[in-house]
Amino acid sequence: MAAMLAFGAQGVSAQEVAEATPSQQLETIDPAAAADVADPEAVAEGSGAYTPMKPTEGKGMPIPAGIDVQTQYSPIGHQANALHIGLVWVMALISLFVLALFVWVILKYNKRSNPVPSKTSHNTLIEVVWTVVPALILLGIAVPSIGLLSAQYKSPPKDAITVKAIGYQWYWGYAYPDNGDFEIVSNMLTKEEAEARGEPFQLAVDNRMVVPAGVPIRFQTTAADVIHSFAVPSLWFKLDAIPGRLNEKLLMIEEPGVYYGQCSELCGARHGYMPIAVEALPMDQYNAWVLAQGGTIAGADEAGIEADPAAVPLQDPESAAQGAPGAGAAPVDPTV
View 1: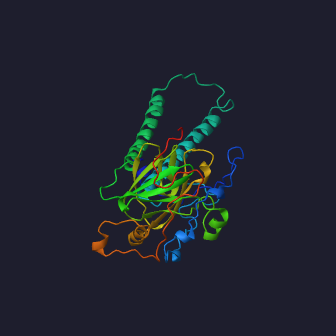
View 2 (view 1 turned 30 degrees about the horizontal axis):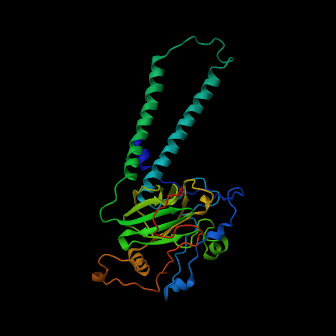
View 3 (view 1 turned 45 degrees about the vertical axis):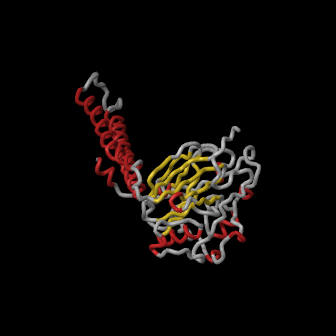
């Protein structure tokens, strides 16, 4: 059973698209009003030729009428989804067994079939079986569960690239400490802009979090005001962003693509309007993107890596959200 749970087949996955409805009592501004659209004049010469990676329909995003988790694109996601599929089969088998017992008892021990009821009050064998078998089932589930728990909190290797997500009310900032410590700000696109880009509304953002694919990432989270939570379902990744605390977790994305998520901690009136878009690029394209942001790459000069202004945009690091702290600003105490 433990082997079945650990190595069960991965199911085709998806999740139902949920339409966010703004509360009139909490939300008085149009969601588009706080979108931080990059100023075209602030973009470096030649970088306007850059087109963000086009998302693949159904990949890294919810799909209509989905009934399962999204398809996974990380090693930990495959491991967790295999356990998920295994547990579904275990629950199905237990449910069928209990149903069969109900049917058997109803048919065999009803008044017509059994006019003289048994007066047996104890059966040692049955009592041992119904105690030992569930315990063995739980033990079988515990083996892969503990393995998954351990894998989810495995420390990143020393050479992992560090990326930090900072939660603000109500948008995300992404900092790159290993690449010059620059930071970009990410806000939700308007419906018109999202449709023009061919991206899902309320998941599309102006500036994505760009990371390399196929390499370990030391992903860190913190917050500048209240508790937020960085969550991307298709990567089986969720990590709380807490003011005054730096949380850290290993992130590995297997292939290039665009992967969407949302803040998963109720953080205020505009909680539903701070989506996450992760763009995973091959390492050479990621290096070019970093250099175009004014960042640095260790050993870039020796390796002959240069920025290609026509390859990537220079994203505006400041936020247009009224009253929000600028990118790179120190966390502030909202009570002061």
